[in-house]
Length: 622
Image (cartoon, rainbow, N blue to C red; front, side, top):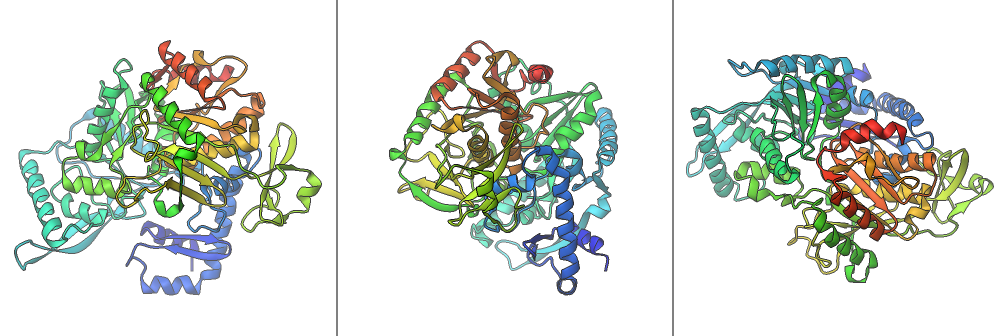
């Protein structure tokens, strides 16, 4: 058997396989894995494991040199809480050329009579650029398949079999163009929505239907919706005319939120690419107003589009955490966080966002978004968080001879991570030219919950406590009813814990008394930074979205790089996330607050992409 072709076939069907400590793990949507495939997996298990393990080694080897210290495998395991053999772990990939090789993209056939010349020209160029970058371009026939399902017509005994053309689970993205429904199309949409509401109420009795089933249910009448077998893996990218209002740097960002959200809802897509004869814009749920000159299409594809396709925006489900509770009134850090949020109100950097029910009027669309947002009732922009001082048991730092006496940890390189007799882990880091052997501490961060008003946090309901040990922990405010409350952690959890862990390992003075963090969807200008102890990094990183542990890796490496370049005397670190925003951190929250307020008052900090170009031009000289 050709193992590579066999695994490729399974991947295209949406069946995932990986090696986990010598065991073969399989994740398959119900009903997809046939008996014949099960037999093949059992028969060739040894060969498949060997292939997967070799593939992992190649991926890890391609990324080790990037960190100059720890492998991405180790960083990913640490910040992702994958140290207890949690299944589903994949080493993070942070190089766009490696991301591209993992992607399969298809282009939906154009509607009859489509005549938008600029978009047609760009669509052809985009196909070529993606293919040149290493992305596998599938024909529409290769990317789709027919499925049949039955529905019961309300108030009758009639069962109807529906045939739908769906995009296969292994496809990473579908590129489409925006369509403007005809009068007949609008009538069909109204009828199918009414039918869906009746079906949900009388047949399903309000039981949830899977996203793929909802899409199959309504896509025949919705010109802007393509049915997907796995909506969590396959993103829809829509090409449309550039919205000049959205990319205008003089228009307030609060207004752009409305424009951006309406565009995403109207096109029912995860990514919208605006095209004109001179510019390209890219929009996703991060709501960045990034714009590229048309001649910079290579940078656009490699640094912006490919990373967004590779890592979709998805929140961490509660099942990834060990759930507990804490008393926020007894936490000095939770109290400081509430104060910090209120003081930031005057800056306008943390807009309230929107409630899903307010902007998505159709039940079928709300049900899809609700499922993909893991039950969140709203979306807000930015976060405030406070990392507590790291917690150690025993020696914080040990000698090289003590390091040599420690035991290896299964699944990790013994040259990077080991443990002592009581299970405390020690890591071999490199600061400057010196090897340092440090204990990996327990990390705790108090954070605003997803959807909360960051500038008016309720201490008793809005502040969650996140933990990172050898697993992820989530502590909810005491006496909160999880079932009755919209208590969901921020999308940016990996970023918060990665920053705190990196600070503990590389910049201990920055976190020894706690570290305040502010994330907003904008950037400071290059002129804002005070010389000697305020620094910026990350401007040229690939623009991975929030909610991914790749974004956590970039922030971890950002702290590491700043320390190696400037030393441990850091008053403020600004960690840039292109097409997303900025994380600004400091050990003194009052100093951080004063500096941010000054920056806003002087026009040196603003929401949106106004100051990004100044950072990009001047970062080389900092």
